[in-house]
Structure formats: C-alpha cells, structure tokens
Length: 474
Ligand SMILES: [Zn+2]
Image (cartoon, rainbow, N blue to C red; front, side, top):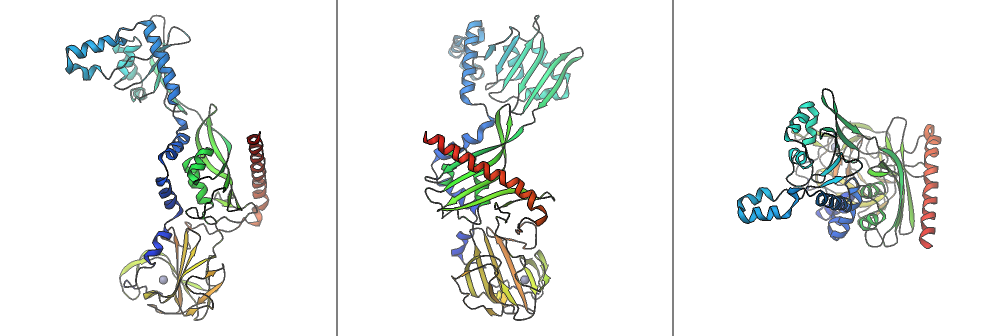
C-alpha cells in the first residue's frame, strides 16, 4: 500500500514538461511552424479523392461551349445584366445561377450537368429540359432517391433521356468509391447505390530529408497521417523533435486503396526504414494469430524496446492502477496512477528500459524516488525506495534491467513496496494495461510466419530504392 500525499510537489519539474510532450505534439507544433506551402503540398497529397480542379475546369469549359452552341437562353450573359440594371433587387436571386453547364456527349440523349452554387435538383432538371413535375416523380419513386437532392458543388449529374424527352436514367458519382443511380422501370424509378470495393495494393516512397521531415515527406508523396505514423513507429529510437538531420532518409511501404486506378485512401504502414544520422532503423508490421498488430524490427524484436513488465522480481502486486480508490492514509477517494509491488525491504528495483535519470532523490510523499526518461515518449517513476544503487544519480544514464535502487518505505508509505508509474507523452497509463504495448518479441511459434512476411518486404524496399536511385541518376 502506498500513500502518495496530495501535498507532494508536482511529479515533474516544470522544465521537463516540455520534454514530456509527445512526438505527435511536437510534430504538430513543427508542422505549424513550417511554411504554408508545405502544408498545402501535404493537402494536395491527401486530396486524392477529390476531382482535380483542372479536370473540372475542362468540363466547365466544354460545357460552356456546348451551351453556346445550343444557344440556351438562360445562358445569355445579357439577360442577367439587363435584369440587374432594371431591377437590382432581383439580382441577388439571378446572380447565383451561372451559365448552365451542359455537355452533350455520346448520344444526343445524354446530358451532363455540374452542380454550381444555388442549384437545386429542380434547376438542374430545368437545365436539361425536363419538366419540374418530373423532379417530384423521381423523388417520390424511392425513399432513397432524395439522395439526389443532397447536391454538392462540383458534383456531376448524368441524365439519359428517351427520344421523347423523358428521363430514363439519372446517375451521379458522389465520391471516388460511391455512385447513385435512378433507372426508369414500369413502376417509376428504381434507386441503386453502388459502392466500389477498393482494391488494396502496396505503395512505396523514398525520401531524403533536406529541411524538415514533413516537407520531405510531402515531396516524396507521403501523406501527413502516414508521416505521423512513421514518426510514431520509430518514436522510441528517433527523437523527431531534435535528432532529425539533413540527409536522413526514409523508405516506406504502405497499403494504398485504389478504385479504377486512382488512389482513394491509405492503409497502415507495412514496413519502413529510417536512417537517422547514419544509423538505420527498420520496422515491419505484423499481425499475430490473435489478431494484434504491432511493429517489429526485421529480426522480430519489438520496435518498442521491450520495457521490463515488472521492475521488481519476486514481488506481489499490492495495489493496481486506478482512477479512483480509497487512499489508505488520507482516507479519500483519489486516483492511484501507478502499480504497487510489495516485496521485502532491500529487494533490487530494475530500470524498466534504457534511459536518462531525470531525478534520483527525495520527492515529497514519494520518498526516495527515481524518474527515468526513455526516448522521447516514455517516462517511468519508482517511489518509496530505501536507497539508490551506486552510480544512479540525477543526469546519469541507465540500461534496461540495471538495478537503480532498493525496496523501502520512505515517504508516505505503510510498508515496504515499490510505487511504479508509467507515462506516455506525459499521460499516466496503466503499466499492466493493454494501452502500453509492452513489447514482447515475435514468439517462437510465429517466427517462421513473421519472417515469411518481413523478408519480402525488406527485399522490396532494397529493390525499389535501387531502382529509384538508378533512374534518378540517368
Ligand atoms: Zn502506489
């Protein structure tokens, strides 16, 4: 049992708060600082689903030409000018309806209309020469048909008309993967929604960092979210806030979702390599037989440098992590943001991972305390120690498994135990919980399966990279 006092000073000195903020936060901050052009570049990468403005422009021009050719009266710019001159109050209504965009293509009974500002289904029907009453007929034919009235600017509607001018088919692509259709039958119109199932392929990017990771990643064609994923995958080994240097490199193979040859979205990173200041780190995603996915080095060790699950051998858990428990001494309900390990006085306590000692000293109700910073993201705390191991002092480095001190009952404590806390990006998490991917290596039983997946990915990165480098030299 432990007795962290509410009077205990803040767990971490203010100077460390900045350091405690996570990779994600720092990256976001960094992204804000970068010039807007960089951000725009990223947006371009991300907006693959949207039709390119150039494409729309071409359509609009085609349509405008078609309109001029057909000499549609409402298209006359003079009509609007005359209106505005004579009755300015009506201009507001007249103005939003720009030249109708009608394109005649394939058969003379085919019409295409691009939705522009102020358009409703009625105005669009009018533009292709359908009577206003047919809108009601169409919308009443099927409950789902009203999806056609949820128009988006730039959306294209395709009409098929019968020789006598009746609507036989209405079709619209509402996204790269979805389209809706109404087809005339003897009862009215039948609604149909078609969702294209994207095919999944793997894509490769290679980038060299010139100024910032985000700029280089955007230039290489890696989306913002994949860039963040990559930073997270390598977050234990690489400090993306401070350690990135010009000339650092990355290779990423990731899942890409494709419809009709067009990328419509991304899946996870399958494998990646990051070279930071001459040292190369490799990551492979692997989903084990229980269905849990995690990243491993090519030889099957976890990317999250295995934290020791229990910093004290032969200990008994006497109190678990809880957001609300009755404090044994204060007799009040308060969070217990750590795990207590009861063990005899003098039992060695081990560092959960490699890191830097932020504190080895007294800390209020925690008594003799060691705080270790692990990479950029993780921090562990060990309280109520009897004393510190030789050589463990504020500012020193420790190795995983190294004895840092001994079980005691200093500070507000009812008996000998270790109070152990684990932080991810400054947030307390349960060291026993699933949230912390306590990195076990690939199990022996799955090793062959893992290698069968990881080796081709490694080979592909080698091959793609050399192909890309060779073609860039030509
Ligand atoms: Zn405790």
